[in-house]
Image 1 (tube, rainbow, N blue to C red):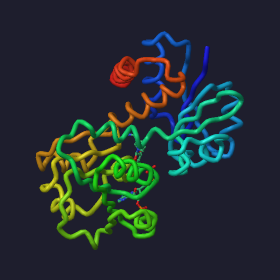
Image 2: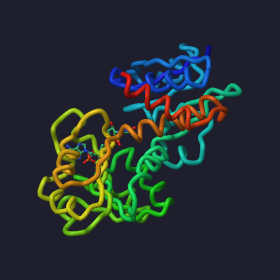
Image 3: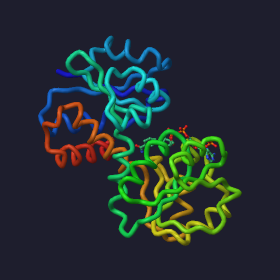
Image 4: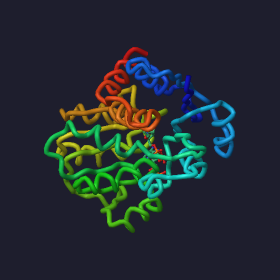
Length: 264
Ligand code: NDP
């Protein structure tokens, strides 16, 4: 039996074991997937081998540690300097990032989206903005503080702080901050969101498993919405594909992961 795990701190809330174990069962792969609470990111590699793992996912706050632990990085993980998927093969640790492609897939259901405003300039926004741009979307970033916007500006993205966003229009507004995860905060001042949301066609929050204040406000403006569970599933499907060396039908994997997520 091959062993897999998710490393994080905290990790108790993670739904990844439910999704991956459900998919292993569906495709008849002899594997098990569990959670490992990791306090010190520098111990990631040591723990990976001590647990006899064949692969792992890595969540907050260890994605940069996983980047450092990788012997080989795929081009995309290298460019975003963050790894959420590790695979052990031929004696080496291979690092991938499936978060951003997972997000891209998760917004396919919204039609007629050309312009996207990302709220937040953290690790996930940094990985996602370039992939959205490459897919043909026009992407802008709004963050509460200016320093984190510098990297985006250097890459040619339109950036805003709360003071500089006036009356621009966007088709899709995405909460990529952690506002609403453990608190009741909105990702931006309410009056600013109330000016922006009415012009949008849809809103997404990448936090999953709850209705955040941002999603609630978007629904009050009658917008189609989605939480982060679709992104969670899509990044999981892509990670599973790496874990199992592209051997299985991803439609079956996706369906099983969806069931695993709901069942819990
Ligand atoms: P980071 O810690 O790298 O970045 C956090 C960002 O949120 C920063 O831009 C920060 O702004 C902003 N922020 C935090 N609190 C507030 C607030 N109260 N008001 C306004 N802005 C705020 O986080 P990540 O990019 O790693 O993760 C962001 C969120 O995405 C998390 O909630 C995480 O759980 C979720 N996530 C979901 C996934 C899924 O599969 N569904 C996958 C990956 C992440 P500042 O620069 O001013 O500090």
